[in-house]
Length: 249
Image (cartoon, rainbow, N blue to C red):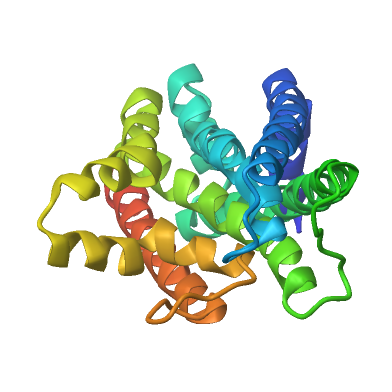
């Protein structure tokens, strides 16, 4: 409990934490509203998923939350405060677990705020254009909106694991951008069989299935896809723990 209180104090006392959170919400909701309006203007009635249009906010929010996860640990290496932290908490696994718990809780709350705000704003835009919109009572919609928070919490922990493994802010953010954006964008240039595999099983692509309502033939279910993301995050976290445990601060 003392470690949790200590990590929460560190987390909430940084100005960058609150600035990142505020910008993430504003940009996420704004992009979700713009994407919903664009989707409504091109509405044809086929494969229409208004909830997915609102959840486009994940594009920006996942990077911001991931960077926040990176900074939770790399900022201590950058400022030289990691050594006092390890002196006060010599059991390094407990220190990393405390950081992960605080980050996961904050990212989950922030993710739910973004998910519900994006959903209601986006559906209001769609309804205002006389296009069929979604409500939380429809099958799969509430799960998709709540899934936004679950997905962002996982991405935050991914950032923490990358930060622990690399101990470099720039290196961890570069890896995060590659995992969430670059590799997925380049997959379209791969042979069709590889590209289809990436579209289905790449961790972040699979994890995003939890925020979708419609399911195309052959696609993973929401919880199966999210399980792949969680397994990947756990593997990265284990690598980060191994580095934290074996290297000097």
